[in-house]
Length: 295
Image (cartoon, rainbow, N blue to C red; front, side):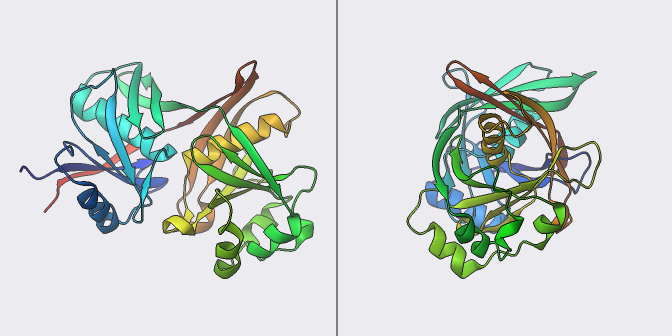
């Protein structure tokens, strides 16, 4: 069997070595589930993706996503990063859309260009599903934070656009920077609920161009803190519209993430309320870092 070729890309970034790094493997159809899981663990990024074939299937490319611990049905930055690699390495010409066939279903990724170079990539996510709400005192203990720092004008709520996430609104950047996840309390908190990840956000930002600052925690999946998270930010986009965080039934905003762990990232969120639900799109830029062959 030929050795799988892989690309390393930075996703949701303006430049190399920022954003969220991703390994994307091509020609992975011959790999077993166990081999994909082992490779993802060895690569040790928050996720690693596997393009099963360079040939389309049902008008899209079959792709699987693994964290170091498990397979995911959907994840944001792997979707954008993989679509970028397909455009650059397989299609090799400007296209307006590429569809990824994921476990969660087909996810379309659309492209904008500066001349012939991909600029912002956008993915349309599933319409958000809103789950249970949580007690502020309980979540503040998980975050090791004074409960008064949580913005109680809005709920702490489980939201899913494919992968459920607990959304926590905070009042200030100071509070967001102070958060320290209590692992013991976190594991106890998520034990009997479907959502295993936590996204916290606040309206104060490091950059004046951005509207929100975000931090994301997924220790259950082997990711203590992620520098950029498309799926969870998709959940956030739906949450912001449903609860009229900006006073409107639609948003078009810039979100910064990863500053607290030294990998500043930039995500674009668009969402609008429609008859069939909330339409959510998450965008970002991708930069290629390296290309190699698995030894």
